Figure 1 (cartoon, rainbow, N blue to C red):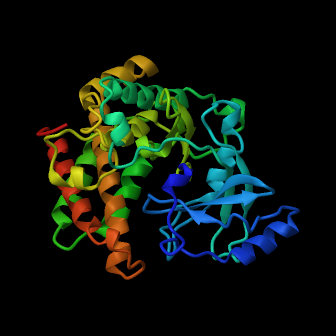
Figure 2: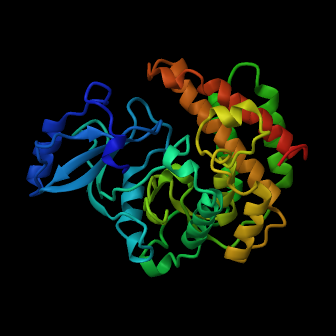
Figure 3: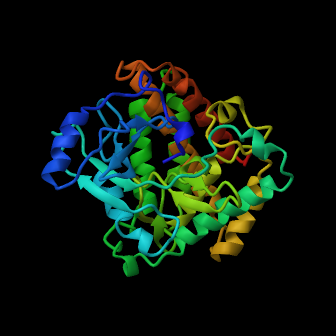
Length: 354
């Protein structure tokens, strides 16, 4: 849900059957406006987001990526369940407006979400922010305070206590990401997957007190107020669940690169931590501990698991290109990036990096 300057051209947009959408919404008593026509938002490698006008108001239509999807991924129904309730607890959550649970309309389920315009910082820091000496401190503060606020939500109070299965969350995570990693691995990387998987099984820790998790929280999933950089919306909740919040925080940290990190960490271009002069990862851990009151003594396990997850996600996206599910050139280097992240994860597990 970026501002309109972040829209793709009609030629570069992934086409949808808008007449089918219009007919479906009309049955529900809603009107998809033809003028202005729907436009796809730029950015992102997975879910497809379009600026539409529903009953005369700007909104966002969101659907999974094209092609075959991994089991349980890109869950529109889960995301809509969260977005229809979480705004009652947090002002920076855009409310879900409608869920189409019929995959036959456009080939996948889709949802419509409240539109919140604002600033989205993607792989590079905008030039108009680069001169601000306090930018790194402010963005670090926003990231850490926002994720701590999410983890502090009383899920039962907003009707989300049925979300996920917190008991055994970490053990399932190890087993699930190991299985996905082997399914998406690059040829010749078997030993890396094996070593990291064995390390995770040997070092697994008990689940911490459960909380609400975003599961892909990073800077480009926050829509910011251009003035004070406060959060207007946290988006991309299709992986949201309940579980150990330290894993969610570790997921954020996996995008929090340092200048001397390996090439793959820079080439993934997920968060401009170096350009924006964010605080160090170590300082981020200390700040999150203060904000959340959580014990970070076993955090290395969460860090390694989240890094392995990140590597596997890139390998899965790269597999889409290797198998021909997508021909988009930007997918071509993702397998190599995933394997590079995997190598860095091995270094972290062995204590040679953090």
